[in-house]
Length: 88
Image (cartoon, rainbow, N blue to C red; front, side):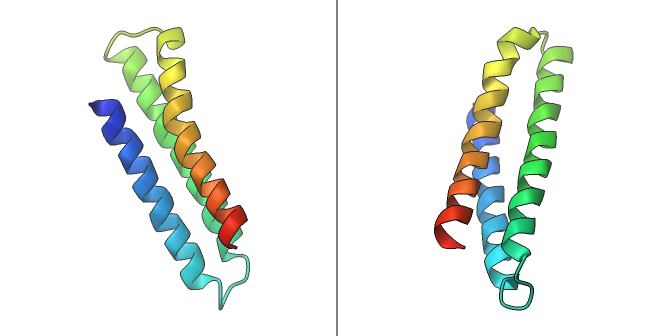
């Protein structure tokens, strides 16, 4: 359940970043690139914090948590890059 909620949060954050990039693109042409870059950096940090919490607090090993990290980081980051490529 926690993984699906974390994934949903990533998708919502990607959507919000996409919308902000589109809103500011008229006045600042690099807004889409900055929104994509900042989303990926922020999401990497949040997914990494989730990995650290899973290892330290939940007692999982890094090898058990790494596929979850890749799933949680990869899907929203890939969607954001695809949105950037397709719509900007």
